Image (cartoon, rainbow over all chains, first blue to last red; front, side, top):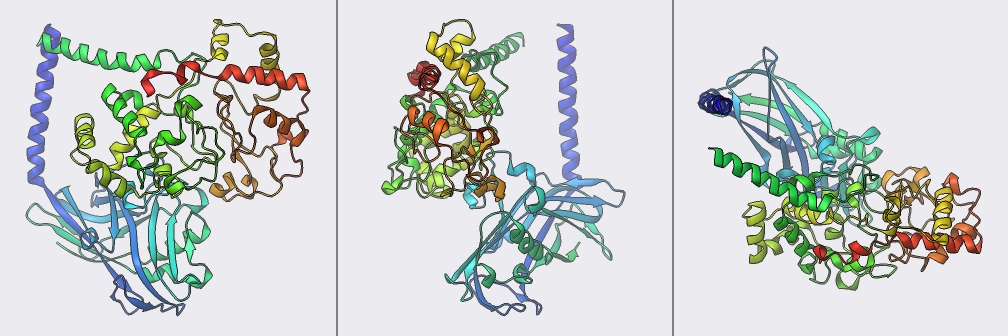
Amino acid sequence: MKNIISLLSLAALIIIGSSACDKNKQKTTGELEIEFEHIWGMNETAFSLNTDYIHPMNGEALNFSTFKYYVSNIILTKEDGTQWKDSNSYYLIDLSKPTSLTLALSKIPVGTYKSMTYTLGVDSLRNVSGAQTGALSTTNGMFWNWNSGYIMLKAEGTSPASSTGSFAFHLGGFSGQHNIVTTKTVVFDTEKLEINKDHACSIHMSASPSYLLCNDAIANGASVMMPGSRAKSLAMDFYSSVNFEHLHN
Amino acid sequence: MAASFLYLFIFTACTKDQVADFQAQVPAYFPKPQYQEHQKDFSQGKFDLGKQLFFDPILSTDHSTSCASCHSQTHGFADHNVRFSTGIYGRKGTRNSPSIVNLIWYPAFGWDGGVNHLEIFHLGPLTNELEMGDNMSHVLNRLNHDETYRKLFKTHYNVDQITDYELFMALTLYISQIQSYQTKYDDFRQGKAHFNQAEKEGYQLFQQRCTACHQEPLFTNFSYQNNGLDSIFADSGRGKITKEISDYGKFRVPSLRNVALTYPYMHDGRFWDLNEVLDHYSEGILENSQNLSPLLKKGMKLSASEKSNLIAFLKMLTDYQLLSDRRFY
């Protein structure tokens, strides 16, 4: 009995201790918004769905009806090397849903951060772990039903360069030579990220759907529906266009 | 304080007992299951909810087809002895509906192993346009408009809005309990039954000729093999998933548990009975078939009495306990 009581008091102490920590954390954490802006081609005009474009490299006419991709596993690194990992780290950027273009991160410890690491795609573990929730739910239409794995980038639309008049690129692959999961790091050179408790900081990113086809063309095949070498090169080309623009502290 | 400790203890013990009820009898010679989440998560209420969903055509676009339509308990959880199953709007599938017994031991699912996890397995039939044919948002929309389901999911999963996660977990909980280990073969292995002469000789022959692929006690080694059915593949099988030339024409080695009931046979249901299957292995293997299993290259000549002994043994793999188990219907 004595043992139980001492165990219980220890437990109580831990509970009190941890709730005190929570209170402290509330005072010492801040928020961050990461905004994704989409542009077209080299002249950097704003990109939008359901708009006629001529591709600047291959000259094809095309019009996107869908453009969706995953961003995940965001990590911020402080000057001293300590890292903060986003616990809810799967975001589906869907160009038809303006609210999805801003990722809202919270409970980040206050401090100066020198870099941000993020992943384009969904890490292999989540591709093999069964039922998932939120951005990874199958209701988003981003999971293959016959060959398990996430469609990490889905681009669909119409083009006269396609014999059927439409195109669909469903790009994924999480293992082996066809793995398209890509991790990138932004190093804040001139201005560091100063997470503070008073207001949300923001990071502006840009991405260009035109890069999907910068080394390819719809005429080469208007449909990709599974992992493979073409899926990989299309995805890599688009991912190369995802860049850090600036930040606001 | 002491009372609450006691309560906690009893509560845990109860939950464990229910699970034990389902799990206790799995023979010691069975391997460790690949999937064990269902044991952690088990409750009778969740199981019953999974069962209700399994039998409910509300999950299909035209309210015509349930999981049970093509996975019938009395038929070893395969379809009702048809080559290709009928799904929504009378559409026919393209592969023979496989038995869904003992799935917790499977490393991958479907004839081509394209599905990598039991919880995600349901997505295929639910969304396939020849089977239940709807996107997940529509399926969930129907469930969320059904007051009974809303209440049941609230009670058992504590959600106001049903998502694919809870639906998949409920179906998985039911399916994961469909286990076959109470056959005459199992009784024999545990010293509780005797084989007659034909069964005994059939078993010996089976162990010499068949267990390289149909490995005991699950009667599959889960590999992908081409057993020499075709020289031109109408269905590329495993090759559809891997795109490797060496995988074309290969299909998962099916388990033979309840095999006497799950006719017709092969991925396309081309053989109506076990005689036809054994005739194929004995006389019909196409040696020029690309990617033919090396084990079949020299053929598998069987005499008439060997065939009938093998069939006598295969009939010992019928699990009458499971076929009539009241928990599942």
